[in-house]
Length: 107
Image 1 (spheres, helix red, strand yellow):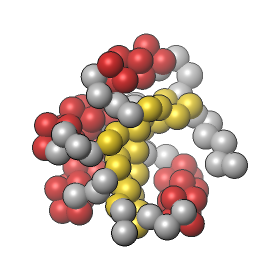
Image 2 (image 1 turned 135 degrees about the vertical axis):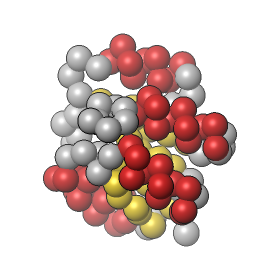
Image 3 (image 1 turned 90 degrees about the vertical axis):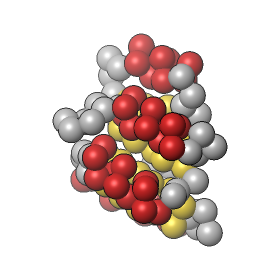
């Protein structure tokens, strides 16, 4: 079973996305911040990391760089809110697979 790590400091977003991802048949791990996410990443070795761009303890760019350094084949998708598109574009240039715009339309 493929593994997905979802990192977001907003509990509502984490829980909704977790349900959707699991419904699609993926084993899903959640973290409320970048540091916790990286601990889970080291332990679980997920195939995909979905991370919020702006978080208080470690931003999504740093998460992406650490993931790519540890496991270049692991894909990273960033979640971004209004006003963060320049960073999202930069992340795409630096190896992110894609980005999702908040609020996320689960449908």
